[in-house]
Length: 99
Image 1 (cartoon, helix red, strand yellow):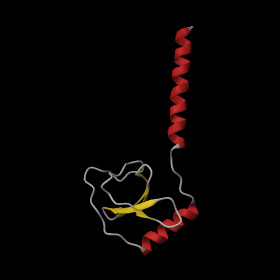
Image 2 (cartoon, rainbow, N blue to C red; image 1 turned 90 degrees about the vertical axis):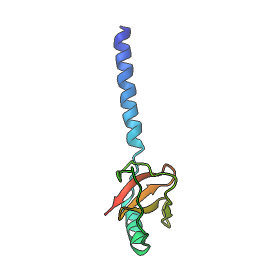
Image 3 (tube, rainbow, N blue to C red; image 1 turned 60 degrees about the horizontal axis):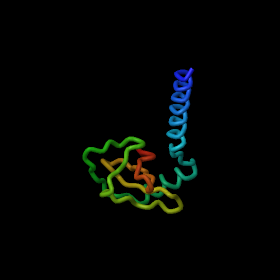
Image 4 (cartoon, helix red, strand yellow; image 1 turned 90 degrees about the horizontal axis):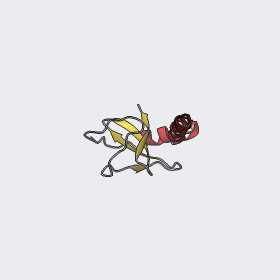
């Protein structure tokens, strides 16, 4: 009986963890994405190289990378390897790569 209970508890905790991870995903509203795209076009930055960091959503940028403000949003951006990367400044995680 206790083995069934442990298995059920483990399954529940696993599902709860998946739900918590999904809740942390950042979704940029279409209006904000438009604001960001228009701003970064008007404010081009020099591209930087960050060895060892893959430009994937969820990747964390090192503290040494300077993030630039996007007015009227809570996000920051930087250009890495000629790709504009939108970052959550609180976590420094990439939330969008603009091609």
